[in-house]
Amino acid sequence: MSPLGTVLEQYILLSGAIFALGAVGFLVRRNVLVQLMSVELMLNAVNLALVAYNRVYYGGAQGQTFAFFVIAVAAAEAAVGLAIVVALYRLRSSVNSDEANALRH
Image 1 (cartoon, rainbow, N blue to C red):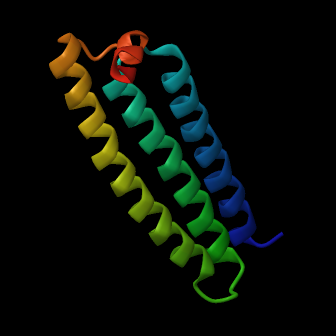
Image 2 (image 1 turned 180 degrees about the vertical axis):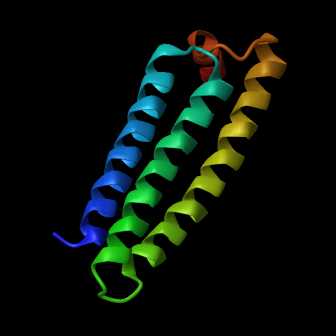
């Protein structure tokens, strides 16, 4: 196997570890801000995997292009998520996700 192939395995393992850390952070914590940061961590783990695969398989820049779109979606998600957090905080003076059902009314 080429040296670049072993580097790909290391990047994929790192990406998997970062994604798992983000998933655990999202599932365990009840603070909405921490959950948003965990989602961002998972999206960045996917971007790392996309760019690593694109580096090994020279088919153009499809992986990097897709990572760019993931970054754009993550920015929109952060803006909408922070707006929801501000609305929740104004309504309940807390950012616990257990109290998010208060936004339904």
